[in-house]
Length: 207
Image (cartoon, rainbow, N blue to C red; front, side, top):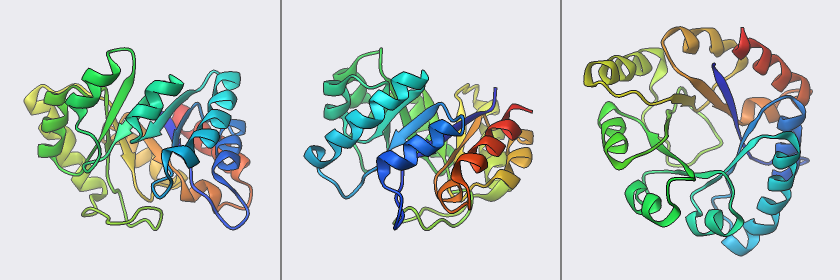
């Protein structure tokens, strides 16, 4: 199954919780709350609102970073970037029942995260994106192919989700090289009708 994740963002007219609602209405069943500039106190009410929406839709809900808040709210998991709490520390703190994802840009990153015990890899960026600061080197299709081939050679069997500037049109190519899913944000919210755009993405991913 090729899965779709949605990473919350905001525009002039759409807030974090509203972006999650639109994605869920479009059929996405994995939401990541990403509010990098906010404190836990500012993020908690938004997280609670989205958590309720995800439970109503039987969708997974993970927090970007915020390991302590994730445990307090008992969401489904966390996604940890390179500058967040180390994965092995988060695993000790959260236990085995929480999903832990990690960000990778290279095969070396993947191997390190595999040793640390992640459940999935968020790998990117696929192309340039404006929704994330301090962007790592862009991978493109060939970069993903190199990482997937290296994982196979090393016997690493972890789900890999492509992230960073991914659009509906990229889905066939990313499926073909062996990725397990994609994570979207800006391409959904910039669409004329975000709900319908997500529906198209979900349908393409299920083909």
